[in-house]
Image (tube, rainbow, N blue to C red; front, side, top):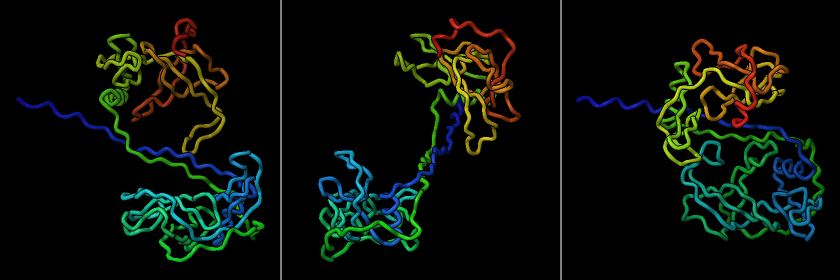
Length: 319
């Protein structure tokens, strides 16, 4: 007897990123510009403590704070954790310690990396100093990392006017998550069905709701869903939004409409773009059908079927 072939395990690398540009106020501008010049600035809070990195508002009273002070490039580790397997884009490519360092003259601690030979070489209370990056641009990465230091504490914090030539006034904040996604049995069947231009959901054996895309279990009843049901292809717009901001790497002219669409036979709505109709004519209850591109593995968009609009009572529970 020949064993059945093992189903292909689907895997896909995914990236979620949202880089955004932000302007800097006078305190943050002075702090980042100072790093470029190998100067570490903090700010005095209303109770006289020195906060590093600086904030523009007191964390206790919410009052605006502007009194800048220069602190030392040396400090003391207050706590730490060993990172044996550095991830891409982290400060060091070799194993290192994440440390909270209270710089000399500061009352709060700064989080950064410590270059150490191993966890046995790290301890709370150890002295460290900044290792500056060879090229500095006015960013927290101008501190390449911390390194062990045997010297004494630096002098106390000294007032600083925060004035530098060619000050940094804005930054691009990178927000990115790279991961590999592997769908389970239910979503694999759904994805494979889309490749055949079919939409396959799964019905809960208890409440009989048909989930599209399927989840493998009913979130309401808590039981497995194994009964596959083909739904659609047509459906009804239950609600929608008009998109006026063009997304990067998306070749679609704005404005366009993104909608929740309840496919015929489905127990909840999925989302898709509406095309083939002016954006200001899209409405709740509009009957739509999928449009596939050559070689596409999922509908490119949905267009009106030409049928009369669905009655509100038919889809009100799916909004």
